[in-house]
Image 1: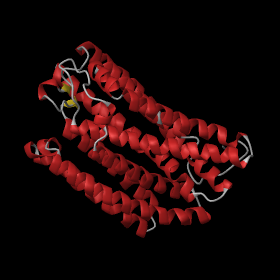
Image 2: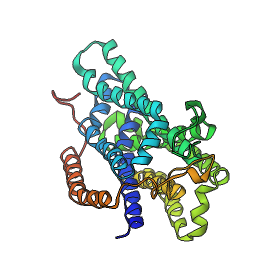
Image 3: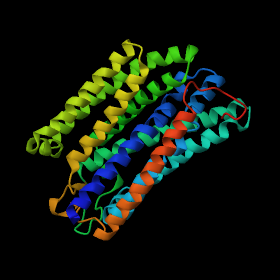
Length: 342
């Protein structure tokens, strides 16, 4: 197996890990974003939190694995990306910590102020994480100013562009919709009826941002359609993406929320694919000079490291999938509160 093929395989693996995280932890973040709006009583707030209680930490394994794979297989890209996005990633880390701590601490005391404080952190951490993910993706799509050695030459404010903010808001809307569908599947009664209305609201907000981001990316960032001109077969993915989006309100109308959740997951998967298609073979494009682009070929580890990594993936990935499937099967059905609940 050639070095170039190994690099492409690992690029695909990274995208699978990223898609897995975006789909699984995406609905966790969406639940946190919707938490203060859909839950009216303390019992409902506990139900919302406990819908993801047994799942959220396992879902974050996909992000940890993505970071570990990037570090081991593309160390030069890891160094440039994490140095450029150091402060945003620290904010992201704190946002994820806030979410985790709020889940664990909220029910430790009955005091309403205590619980209100942790509810606010749960919402803040979830919303900030989703926004930061989107802004980072927008910045990468537009490219960063890099030196010949891959060092970032700009400032934090240079990353915060109108397009990046738009992608951040789009990510918020997408995950809120994804989370509302998941919550609808996990709840019942008045809360579920309320969530039906929120599914529709978040869908139309998502749709508006989807149209804006797609138009801006297509017209304003030539790299997003470059590969589609060279390989027309890739247009199958945007077509399937549009069909998946169209099926979400159809599934609402037919009272088939699980189909809506599958379509929402396929939409997220398609977004990850379209991002990778726009970047390939880059991991971090240089806006100032294409010669400084950090690609999967000039940032990869040695061939032996890439091969050993594939062996680890062949052993570890089935274990991760088995664990994930077991957890979801164990906690299937409607969420119920018990003495061990959050």
